[in-house]
Image (cartoon, rainbow, N blue to C red; front, top):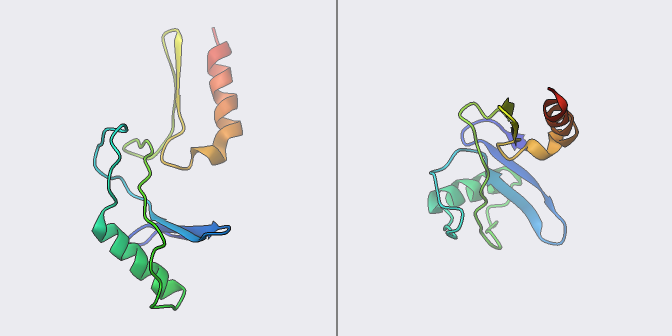
Length: 113
């Protein structure tokens, strides 16, 4: 389930765990080597959203964690050649869905003279 409203939220089943829910948005720039803490306001918004959608005011998170992913300003992919180097970043947390297409394009760029 995806809700592109405010906040932009996604939710999907997590077998054996319950429901995985998260906000899709750009957060602050962080050092990926630092284990960040979840934003309390974000957790509150997500808990409220899940409780409303699933009509269960008793819902509380079993655990909370952060996840990092790359983002471009327009949430598009970076697939280009820079001189002899091919650069590829299928960003924004949804690149895996486009893996075959991204792979094909990067191969084309690598093989181009």
